[in-house]
Length: 231
Image (cartoon, rainbow, N blue to C red):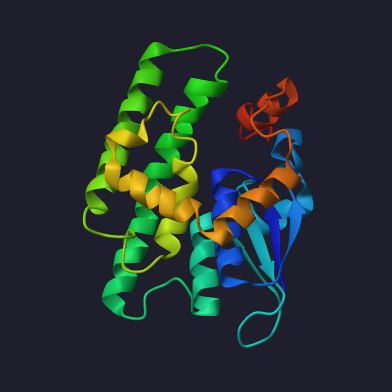
């Protein structure tokens, strides 16, 4: 059984997309990041960076003690290797999928996260920051659009690379992006959105956090007021 410590954010959605696609049994343990539950000492034992998602696999391949994994990209790789699903069968395809997974982890996610912050959550609207991250978001959409030219998915068949990128494209309107400007991304996006596993994963998210999109002052303090001295 996979124990998923989860809140419905783009990084959280990556893991539920995989688990629903692969039909792996799992249990959700909500981590309400708006209430500061990511700082609970028991959670920090498996996620020392106080970020979710994280998983505990109490039935790892080969047996033995449970394995915990934090960082959404590492979780996707772990689950792909465990199940033999959504990671290419040959070295060339695996390299392609892995490097695009790293592209999402190192570029698409962090830059779009800054877009979300300055566009939606920052108490002060800073035009330079908004312009900077909206333009970088557009650049990254362009990278993805060129990659998808003539391809159904990012690298070979539907894979962890697609699962990693898709949740970050879902809020494209809030990021100041029009998918019609990126026709290959738009086609890819619609294909993934219509997958039954995607629909199950996002329906589940609504039950975990029906108030998605709201931001209380308590949530701001927990999410944006951290320092080395005070989480």
